[in-house]
Length: 157
Image 1 (cartoon, rainbow, N blue to C red):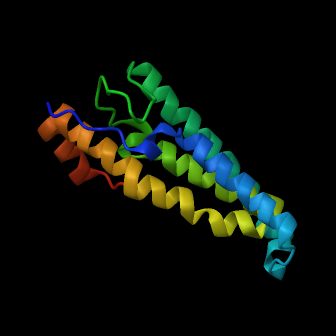
Image 2: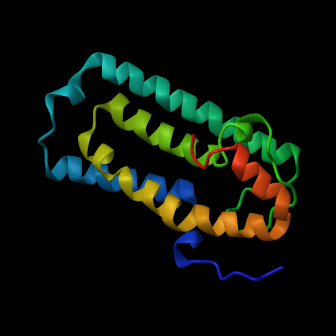
């Protein structure tokens, strides 16, 4: 099995990356007070809270599957098992989908524009750095089983 160096951005846990980005968006919200009118729509706020709730449920279900299978939640850790059931049957990265849903839902629920604009940053880091690193590790660890899983299940949704 090939030893891979952990990229620097992998040292920041994904929930922290999402939280720091959201906080930066909230800071921008205070500095640049302009926001489009649609951010004040009550229906959009309601949808946001539903999305945030769905993100929380998905996060708990995904973490629960890892707990049941006794494998690591750490993106830089070594997986003990290939988890491909539950939420992982629908997405190879349901935890990152859950973080994105919760972030999006919170921004919409609060009617905050700038956090929405910045959401692209953690998603880009996940897609360009974190997920490729994890996928390479999973290919090394689980070989053909992981390749088959990748053919069956999409990266995000």
